[in-house]
Length: 530
Image 1 (cartoon, rainbow, N blue to C red):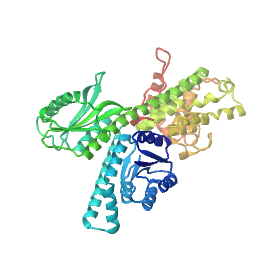
Image 2 (cartoon, rainbow, N blue to C red; image 1 turned 90 degrees about the vertical axis):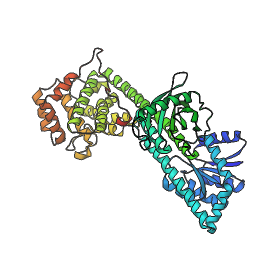
Image 3 (cartoon, one colour; image 1 turned 135 degrees about the vertical axis):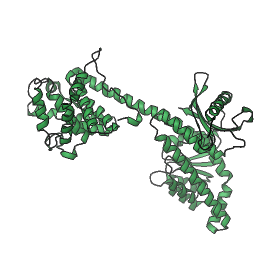
Image 4 (cartoon, helix red, strand yellow; image 1 turned 180 degrees about the vertical axis):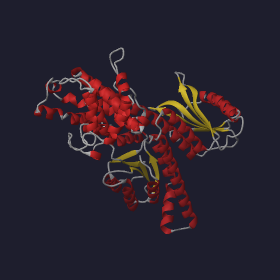
């Protein structure tokens, strides 16, 4: 067959060309709608796959152009961001099917074969729509549209449900719930393959509350689990059709379990688990469409686990990189490290006293530890000068908030933390630096950090002066309310100080037996990450 693939991503075009050429098809490639129409006008194209979102001419516009030129060419749309409106619009525009990215090559081939098998029917439907031949045919088209819309809604629900999970446990729990929703079977199980022999072990099981009621249900779930383990040990998932990635079987000989729908869960294309839905009644069968949805849920579950691992690995690498910066700075000025730890601890107490959410406290933790990281770009002659800085030297030291914000900005993930680092020397009356922000213009977490920063600075020894008496320190904070500091933050500070909370926390920040204190004492998972 002559097949045309239209996509603005060259790797995708290279992949489909290699695969479909190996199947003895003639493959034509286009990077945009204009190139596609030039090929269609010069070649006999029998099937066209097109991306939906492309620069210049969209996949929808290309479908219109193809229909106007030759309405016998079936068009299949590929998209990574499906929506109900887009699906209905594409189907009404002559598009015969759509695929949701990431797309398996085998799945594309099966869809293409299915589309070509029904191309005669599609052409007839187009003619019927144009000539309004028969109410029955139009009603059938309407039903197909509704079924496609329902299918798309279900796929969107699967995507949104699993992408909202913040931990592996939550991914598994939501996958089980989706399996019951999709299949309407009596129970669902999630098995993990353990060890070199890939022996299945049940990680989670759940009965359908609509079907599994009354006493003895827990025992039934457990008995069925043992049957399924035996069945899985004798089942090869390598031979499953890629279009479905699942298997349906009537298993009367098993005992409790009568019908099974199963789909493998993979990490980096390697199986690590199986999602199984079962029925305990006779004659419970599932359509290929339902099994396909179940397989999609299993595939998306594997991707979600993989993405979560990647997400956490990225944060671990970022922490390691920033830790190296702070290590370098500590080698030059040991005071900075301890100062950042104490400032972070005090700022976290203030955030809690002000009843800020956990997400804000996590942001404070990162920003506090890194608020002076920009001093790595300041000359030692200025940073470690024992006496008072002159005007030029002070202008140079004022650069460190911007330097620090730029360092964090290069990491690409911490926009809030970057702005706190940039603005922690701004003053409530607008007389601070680097940008002279005032009042509500200053991020609230930066206003919290400013109080903690000044308190620790005046209560500890610096290279250029000894620590100030306690009462002097408190007066600086008190008299700075409304000009240097946000009054709300000052009130929270004295509420904690008068109860001895701040003093106790600072005393706790002593080096451990190795002489070190961890930079980031509480790593967060995705749902609570900075």
